[in-house]
Image 1 (cartoon, rainbow, N blue to C red):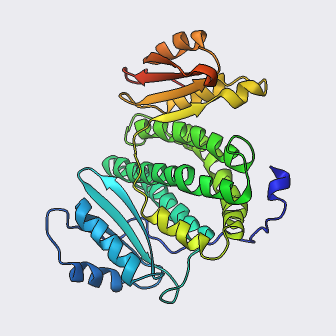
Image 2 (image 1 turned 135 degrees about the vertical axis):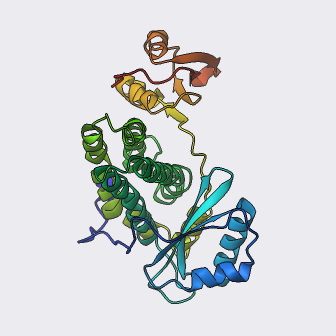
Length: 331
């Protein structure tokens, strides 16, 4: 990992955009706004100003297509599922029309946008507004899971291909492993943030202990590396793909422990961390070189049923489905 990253220059400070804890919101999901009216709302934004639009999926995708074609380079945006609608955060960049975007700029902005929801959730809780705290934390969780999704589905494969990085070793492998811990910590906080009788401080400390250094490594190392190795318009095209990304925001996870076992490492801790991040109705898929029979009993105590598929020379795929709620006091 060190050798791969040695050629990357560190930024003195990560690039941050101006955001608000609760940006102006317009719920137009039950209306049929004219495209020109939506563009007027977006065009009125000052540089660094953030706007939230809740729209039908069809209207949101039409707006994104228009911004991509007619407002190229002027805005950052992030769509995410919100019930039967799409919620789109839009921010005007400090940039000229047609200017290209880099991975560092776009994803650092998304970090700041996501962090603001977490900060707002705990500010609301401190003020005794527990329902508001729950709602803001849910936005944080959904936005963060979308961010993790496009990193793993779009950014990491592009970076691995351009830089010749193996997906099971090096910097992207480290980021994927940390994503598992981050997801699990967020799921635990989801249960506590809106509960007046709970103390979420230790869980928040656990989350920040992983999330803050993780984001710093991305902004100081991984994102600049992506901008460097994606030649020409590669970074701008990758950001466009990220902006169009619509995540599956379920708590499902896939974990391939074959490389760990090949290295002689014990993957149980990693599997348990991933399992604790699965909500009832979700599933954890583990790929292993053999059937891990002792694991069946361990995860059964956490409310999981299992199904095993023989992949032949590639080993086994075991699907663990969580059928029971998280037990009280579960670590």
